[in-house]
Image (cartoon, rainbow over all chains, first blue to last red; front, top):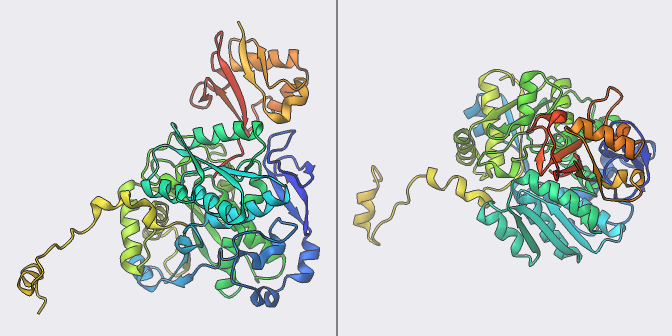
Length: 409
Length: 91
């Protein structure tokens, strides 16, 4: 409806709306181009607020031409003020944007997949597929059933049990590749050239990635139509960072938020921090790494949007930081113990990086920060299982209970 | 000394539709020069105006990313397989 076409982010060449993802000339990524003048005429705060609480309330800014076919309950997850966490971190105000309860598969990937599969139907694909570290596979698997596609998901063979199970339960084809995510990704790029399948994060990537903008739209809307001062975002491919930025920029351009001066902070795990490394070295080149971290969902050693995420961090006056696996576990526990939210390892990375940046006064203590929680802790239980309080096991009588509880009476 | 080169979709028009071609060269850099001789126009698609490999193309020699090897100076030998894969995927 409002999509003009695709455009190469590197050389600016234009392309029609097709299931393509790279510029034929320079291999740069293709980006969806909208008719913002037309959107401005219809998309007002009032109009948005009238609509259902899901990602499609921003549909003019999403790249589908027809009606959405799935994700009708996806998005509009809680953004809440985290007072206990703010106190623990020593900052004036802290908000948590909580996609650990996104519908239906408990991660932000439901957003991108809802957009991608709606687009896959428009392109008349019969089979959908993806390369994934787990969450995306879960989302593609689930949404594919709800909207009637055949489905193949490709993951590294060594994922957490729950991430495997949370794809298999939908009865889809799960292919466990004996390699890391970057190898899975490369294989999928080659398969996508051979099979006429909709690989959501390969040949549908320009459309798919737009779904992540809704995370940014919601943060702004839920803050009362304004952009936050600081936002900390976990980075794997870097796509979420670039799309939250694009989303806020669009809201600003459309006059939906009064100003946009947000500082963007990128969070990675030390065992896989190519964007952080480039930031700290002052380099414009992202050197790939071989990932080794418990934060498997963001273990992408060769981040497709790394250079763009890096650019956003630099131009907004933000920072990029990494934390150790021990800090990740502490981060997961800190969010759980202060706010009662159990996030996965990527969320632990984000909380721990936020803590580090506040301690070092890189994020000012007298400002507000939004922490992006993108996944659910029930999917990565292995990471914390040996780091918790022991279970209190007792006989079924009061005496034994008293023996185990100090100062209970 | 022949090296197999896997060609990605956007470049098939330059190789007459062939997804796999053969070329020669002691290094990746030399291989690209030879590809240019065999399929004119290929080099400017793989390299930018300064002659550097474009930043959104990944090159693999026998499944290893050349940034883990010696970049465009990565040595090649008979029977090696070079894959040219668009970088923008995944995540």
